[in-house]
Length: 134
Image (cartoon, rainbow, N blue to C red; front, side, top):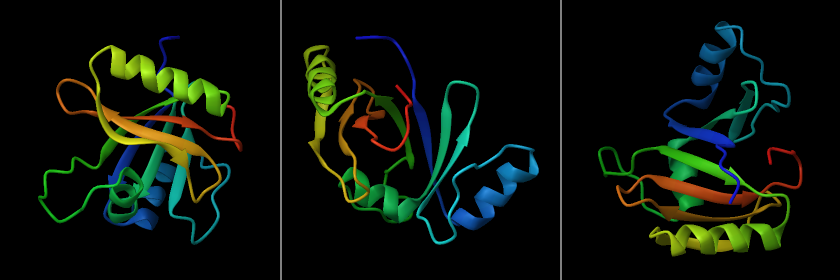
């Protein structure tokens, strides 16, 4: 597997407030659409993603409650195709990752699954047909 970190996703309490904060730092959110549940900031080869906490928990497939133990942070490893997601997902499992959510089609038009590393950090393995973050 090619070593890379495609996205860092932060679960946030107020997406608008967080987006404005990062924009105030001078970071750009090139494809922001008002009402979108997620905002992306390109950071020179890596992307910072802001996602409402409850929406992120729903995407992962876990319950979210304040102080529930859900860390509201995921790391992403993007691949160029659905088949590559399946291959990389299996490589994560072979290395000792734990299944959280098997790869499946998403409501945003992509394909992704989640695993945890041995310390419980969430990794999304994804294909995004709208961006080339591979």
